[in-house]
Structure formats: structure tokens, C-alpha cells
Length: 294
Image (cartoon, rainbow, N blue to C red):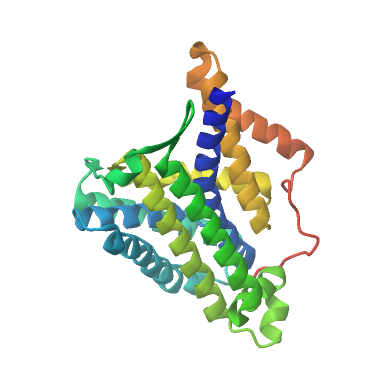
């Protein structure tokens, strides 16, 4: 039972990171019908910002790691996606790939291709003990951060004027604009929030791995994208649920697959996802309302 609980804690921690990244992807997709594959580079720029701060305290480190991807996300929206906003969805997707590779190559040009090591805080290397169960403080911080950000995002979307406009735009952007919603502000807000979520995920990822490199965002965002598709691209609840499900599935396969099959762990995970999507092609959580892009 202790082993099962330990694996469950690991799965929830991993699923929390997927959920944060999935929320950023789903939020932008809900308004623009854009799958932003450059979202991973927001994670990367946040991590490199941390390496430039050296051994700064968390009171400096965390705000910077949230602010840098926020600025990059707003710049990405203004200079890369706004000029092609009315283009076909394929054009938007190609633009996101172009931005992704541009930022990756800039990072390699500026910081080099060699991965950098960083230790954000020694506090997270410690654990809480409850009998024979050991709970890493980093896992507690990961789950706690995710819960706080999800609650904050929920309150923003339901209790603020701008948040209500974002929700209305995600349901029917054309009608929202007819009713006076300003497209530029709403879309920039969605990108800004996605940047903050990417920064939080970057902090948690770097705390876990202690390594920063130019393509670090690709793997995490690919997994988060799969989780979002699993939960439902049009649902923020689905993004969170899909992240948790993929986290549980990943840890379960890592823990219980025979050693000879461990190298195929990712393949088994995606086979299960495909099987789910065969029965639920729109994902597990599908809103009743239809949505149209700008």
C-alpha cells in the first residue's frame, strides 16, 4: 500500500505540471483555434532567465520566472500571431512552429547547446515522512502551486469583467465582438495568462530536473498537448483532467511495466490514449456549446 501511495503522489505531481501546461494550450485554443506549439519555448525562456539570476532568492526568482514568459507570450501574440490572425488554421499552426524553432535557435546561439545545471532551492530536496511513506516537498509544492493557480484562474474567469469576456470569446468569438468585446485585449490576455502558467510549470520542471537546455519545453508541451486532446481541447476542465490522467498513466507504466518493456513505456501510454480517443474523439470533456474562431 505504501508503494502504491508513493506512486500516486508521483503521478499527481507529474499530472499537475501537465495540467498547468495544458491549461495554457487550451486557453489560447479556445479563443483562436490555435494549437500553439511555441508554448514550450515559454517554459524554456523562463528557465534560462533563472540561470542568469545565479543564486538569487526565491522572492526574486519566482517573479522573474513568471514575468519573462509573460512578456514573451505578449510579444509572440503581437508580432507573430496578430498579423495572421484571420488566416487559415494551418497558417497559424505553421507560424507557431516557426516561432518555436526561432526561439530554440536563438537560445542555442545565445546560451550554447550544452545543457546548464541549476539548483533553484535546497528546500525542495527534502521530504516529509509519514510512517514508511516519504513525500518530497517538491511534490507538495507542485500540487499546491497547481491548485492555487487553477483557483485563481477560475476566479478570474468567473468574477472579473475581462475574465467573463475571455469566456464569452471562447464560446463564440464573432458574437462577442459584435457585443463590444475588444479582440486584441482578450487575445493578449489569453496569451499573457498562458505565459504565466508556462513560467510556473518551468519553475517546477527545473526544480525537478535541475537542467536547462534549448529544447526542454518540447517534450513537456507535447505530453501536455496529448493530455489536452485526451481531456478535450475545448475544455479547461478537460485540460486539467487530461493532465492528471496522463500523469497517472505514465507513472503506472513506469512502475509496473516489466524491465524488458520499459523502453516502450511512452508507446504504451499513447496506445491507451488512442484507444480512449477512438471511443471519445472529441475528448473526455466536451462542452455543449460550439465555438468559432475569430
